[in-house]
Image (cartoon, rainbow, N blue to C red; front, top):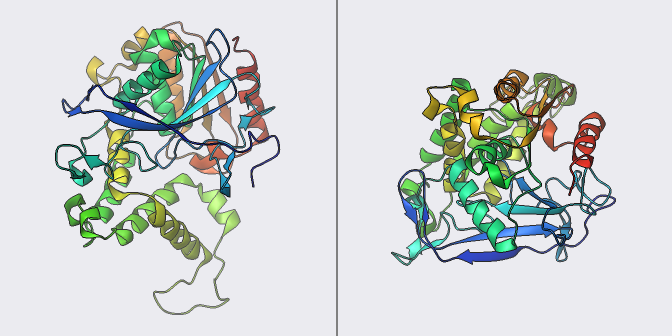
Length: 375
């Protein structure tokens, strides 16, 4: 069940946009659909809207639970709700499943109107910038000219950063949490290993597995296992699992011996049951491609010169995938442009996943910043 002070029972909504969307790659996506949820009430001035952007495996379901599935609680329910840091008594909160997602928005599992069959691998590559363009159309649909804030962690934080550059007059505050201005070579390498696990699966069928009635489960399972290792810190793994043996003794086999092996297999199996492989490939590529400084000869300050928003940037001490130094790059570039920025480097032993957790210090900082946003 959802936590105390939850928004309660929620329902997903769907909107279709008939006009094409020109993508950063040069491809054009015909009419598309977005699935979204809203919490709270949009005020008369339309000035209290907050967009929450999801990370790689996230969705539009941010808070609350469904009437027919009370155990399906939103992925940021500890943060969003009445009396919570992102207080729905003050803000009108919007969550959207991005283009290419597998939770109802147009993506690889959707039917390609040109062929009458599922897109599969033929779905065009989408980027963070394309998501911002699609989210802007959703804002127009909802009557929101300017977001009070755009909030996101990890890949969601990249979207908040992109909003501040791409549509600077439509965002007043950007909250960029556990994120980076671009991926390091090591991060791209991890993503490539995960992608190769998927495309090497015999059931992948060059991305058209749905037409063949199969799912590349083994590849997805391995991809998630690799990814999950990078989301945790060494200290958290050690504290939670250490070298604990699953059966109290060595099996002297290649089956599960250690609790950490069992945990990773469980996470991989669970993920492979609900997430789409083509979506995973696309989301990791969107991560790889994101680099607002690319068109400015690597100068992030020049890329952020167009921004007008105020910023809250947060990092976590044990996050080695998006280390605090990456957040400080963003902060320095913002200060170079004399923009208002609050920065927090939070001690937390949970690694990259810290941004999802109910850490008291982290939440108190978010609460303090959000309380000072005027609507």
